[in-house]
Amino acid sequence: MLAKRIIACLDCDLGLKGGRVVKGIKFKKIRYAGLPWELAERYYKERIDEIVFLDITASAGRRTTMVEVVEKTCQRVFIPITVGGGIRTIEDAKKLFKAGADKISINTAAIKNPKLISELSQTFGSQAVVIALDAKRRNNWFECSIYGGRKFTGVDAILWAKRVERLGAGEILLTSMDRDGTKEGFDLELTRRVSEAVSIPVIASGGAGKKEHFLEVFKKGKADAALAASLFHFKEIKIQELKKYLKERSINVR
Image (cartoon, rainbow, N blue to C red):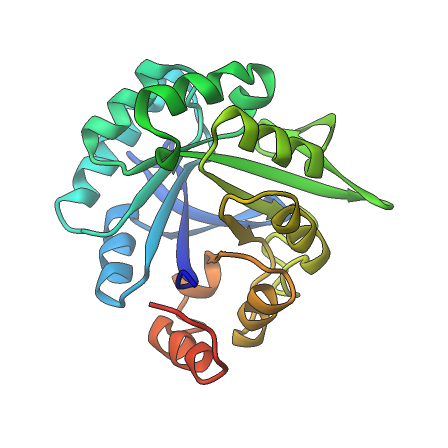
């Protein structure tokens, strides 16, 4: 069985003095957390498994800034790095891979142009293509959103997960909009349903608040990886202590 991964997410507002990490609650109420390359280096030293950079204010004009952030980070950090936000073309992705990214993540562009998933997969390999899926509960189903949670699509999250796998995606970054930043725990039903629907890895995101939540999402949610942001940014949980806790409870972590 593959080891479960612990991932740190750095939401970058590239309009803040060349790039700053921020964190919100339910995609709102943003607060400042630090410089992306400095936080990434700290996580690397603390033995995080992977890092995800998300450009939350993505635009074509800021793509150069994200390239610079990735370049600076890769001079200090030697673990897998995923970059997402505003990637619309093969050329956008190519610039980020050249800067040092190991994977790219797309959401809005994928829903608006699903064939882009296949094009990216064929060009860079499925292992390098992550689909970010931001979902909100609607009674007995989950709806996908785009544009950083600002627009809803009518697309069913479970059906979309199955489709992106068929199109060549290698991984899904699954965020519960209802749990984002709340520290109330991951959405176990959403995570389990997506994990059971696909054979590619699923990263659970949104709601981590304590060590027990990671245990739950691995056991009950059947996630392959779990992601957190503010919990790690503000040192509420130490990564090595979290890994020790999980190992003691028979979760295979790195």
